[in-house]
Length: 441
Image 1 (cartoon, rainbow, N blue to C red):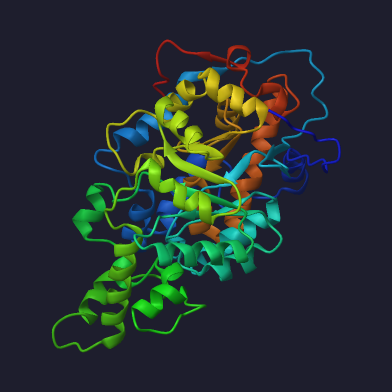
Image 2: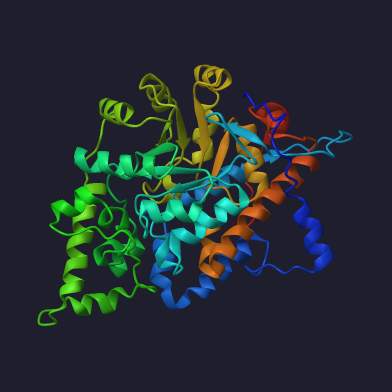
């Protein structure tokens, strides 16, 4: 993996450790243990439990979600001693851009149901830390508003592929104009998965016009709806769907609620329409996006090869965090097989194809394992959302800084001083246990 760090600024994430011990700096999220942070997020949202479950719930029986975590735990790091790892860094290069670490913010939708600032808080935190922000099509803020919050930060745009070409072209044009440099195309959510909790509670934010703000700020979509664009729409927080349904009851006469329902349904028909695209359809995106295109949701070697055949620039090995198909293989197992392909490895080494990993990253050791397995970068999702729910921008920033500090410390204690030293070195860095770790996840 090419990585020229000669002129890149040196960042020591582990300095956070010294700061904590010397200044008695207590975490705004209540703990630096990701399990405790998750529990804290559940506690602070207990009055908004449906929103918590919508964000952190899974498909079916959560089998795939558990598989993701168990697969990572089954691989163990082999620490090496008496190596000079005093000067460490996590720097890497993705699509020709030097970055301080291999960590990216995953594209998580509807962030505004967990915090009043939604994606604006996360985009700002990501820029502060130097972590690329991937914006979801299901955001509660417009493309332009998120770009402004992200400032000079690196940002990519995730596409839930609209049914209509004119809407797709409008969204792509706006993203490019707003400084989003790479396009992430999600392939596993042409239809929303079977999620029992959301079904039991009939909880769907889009029905209330929340999470459709990319659509309500789009001139092509809104012209079709016969309405003016809403460039800076900010849905009310917290979202109370029961109260919203009462506004829709016969005789209530709430025109704004009826309009929100119309817009939500209209955008869902575009972005999650049930229209399943094919490999041939990618030619349209290739012809209309000037920049890297990354396919998210790849879980098989054959599909990784197909992405290369389609002239895609990279893939994200992901199963949507276990939120789409219950009973599926773990994302880490998929990564293991995909990066074992000589064709994939050769393209990675030559710089013509990039493999990223998503679904299961919780702590620094997970980052190390994914890089050693052959991923060139990792996406973090649920953990930053826990921080967002607890303390907004500050909570997200703390999650990111602590994850990076833990990654750098683990890297050095394992006998390595750079990401390049461990990349695709699974045989030297990792060992697979005969049985999974039975410790409570």
